[in-house]
Image 1 (cartoon, rainbow, N blue to C red):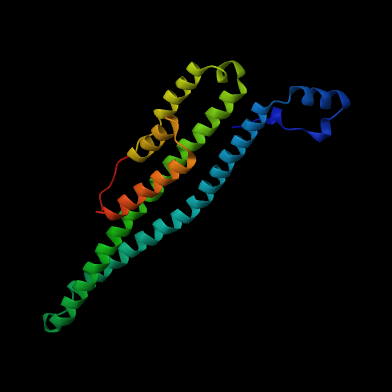
Image 2 (image 1 turned 180 degrees about the horizontal axis):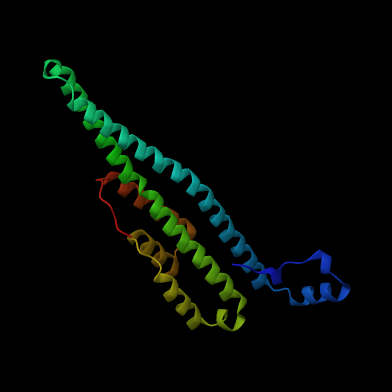
Length: 196
């Protein structure tokens, strides 16, 4: 989202342009600028985290390959050393299970990036919406905006939180709901994958 027309450009300032900017200054434009800042900060954070996640993915791939290579070596152990082979097999099995559990847990990043993408889109849509006084002053237009944004949400958590906020919950109530949902998820951690 870009709002260059809302930002002053000192190199082009004349008394006339300064007066024009002052006269066209609106609270809506300032809200839009702050929303654009939030959206840009999220984009920056996501870009930085992509680098770290790529490194983690390579590490997981390396662990899996090393486990497979050790398994192949274990298969070559002579029967006379059976006790060592059985121990190695148990250790490799534990490594495989831990790696599989880590991969499932690692799916948080996909969910996180999708949810932050929804937030970024919502911020952009809201910024454009508040700058249009004709739309932002009408309750029906707000309902249309909510309907558009509601379609973004794929997970149950997102839909519940959206409904809470649209129905008038406070930020504190939303935080409490999120904390309770997180506790429930931790208690029910079964390794299931939610498709979103």
